[in-house]
Image (cartoon, rainbow, N blue to C red):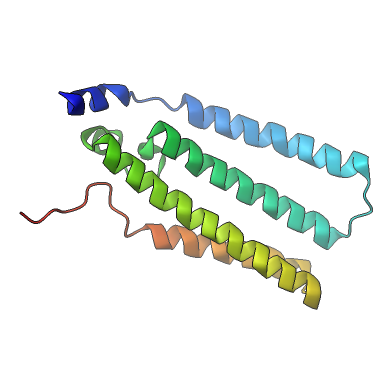
Length: 152
């Protein structure tokens, strides 16, 4: 019976995802305005790193939202039907694995950016490193399965 309740709980809706995208644009605008208005005399490198931290934060917020709402069908290769057939525990575990990978990516990028600041890597290298870290993280999530195969 509780499995049925799990299934009914997961209605198909993309409203939260739309709200997330809208908030991304709103907060990006506010962030940009603040960086301009505050005029901290930041170098283009520091400004770029702040933008990349901002993007990391929003990527993590997306996976945190997916984890909290169990809407794992927001993740590209999961259908709503598959999400609905999974148990609450399976959905949360699946989403949690994604969240952890992207949190680790953020930590790796922060460590990289400290090294980049010390050795004064070009800004283009920072953007490239961020892109590679995110792509590798996404590839690392491919083996994750919503429903684990149980041998009985």
